[in-house]
Length: 95
Image (cartoon, rainbow, N blue to C red; front, side, top):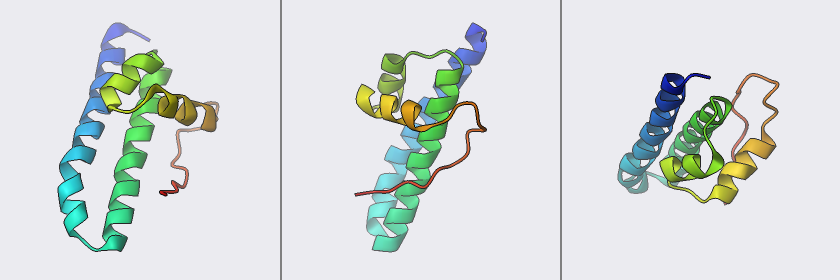
């Protein structure tokens, strides 16, 4: 992929991470069900952005920095996704 595409994909990862952080306070103030659903949605959005950026050529380390998560989580998301398939949402289990 070209450098511009890669930079745009990484920007989307940073934006998804920002949205998760920004929404955290509002989700915490909501009901438990809303918190779980909201967090699952935002984490799912972040995961999809990470996978798209990885497909565009971003390194695992750069993605971890952009997403503000540990590299191990990025590796889990990559390993758990069959990238031969469309980047479809998979159920997210929060513990």
